[in-house]
Image (tube, rainbow, N blue to C red; front, side, top):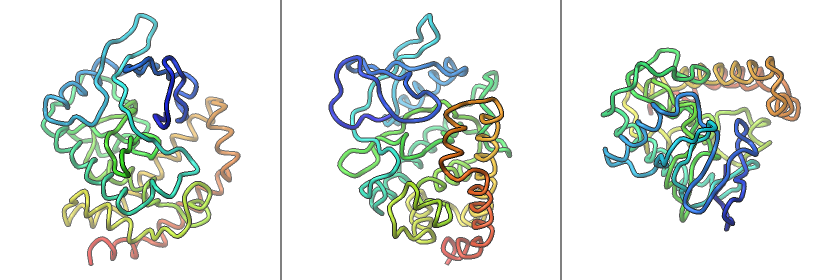
Length: 271
């Protein structure tokens, strides 16, 4: 969704694929479809605030018709094709720092093990910290060129910090072959340099830096499976997007490029 520009009360918020056309702002409150894990997720969001992380929506309540109400976070959210302002190195550093703040707070909060957290984009290795799993530009609120908040925690699930960084890198570096990146990102982005900036601003450990390129490949495979499941289910939004963005040949090209560039990314992260 986007909070960019002035919005009248009750206006639909555009952006995103999973809840397109179903998210509305009513003054200081956003109303949207509640995820299956809404109760556990709301408890987690409240706990984040208690642990000092004020950069996420706060739950207001669940409605009887299966929707949730959250506080509205003012600012700008970039939608594809992404404008250059959201892909500056300053913006990238702020995203890494914001993600680290989220993880520092999340690490102190026990994960609700009774909740059926979505597995579609979750870390296959599991973990004891709730990860966002979808820190794409569409889900980061900016103010004055800096990442100020994260929204849309629908795909949150337990995992490792390096998995969430890998998922974030896919969108913000981006970890895409040049032809795929050019479709929605500004030109001239240097992937190895930007991957190092993200790792530095987040504060990845030496071992996490060494692991990151391969984890990005795993995350890309998970994203491909996520799309494949929705296409198989007949989801018209994902089916159209797949067709418009180059089909499965594009995914083959991305995955091949990541493998071919693995040593380059490893060197950028470790040297």
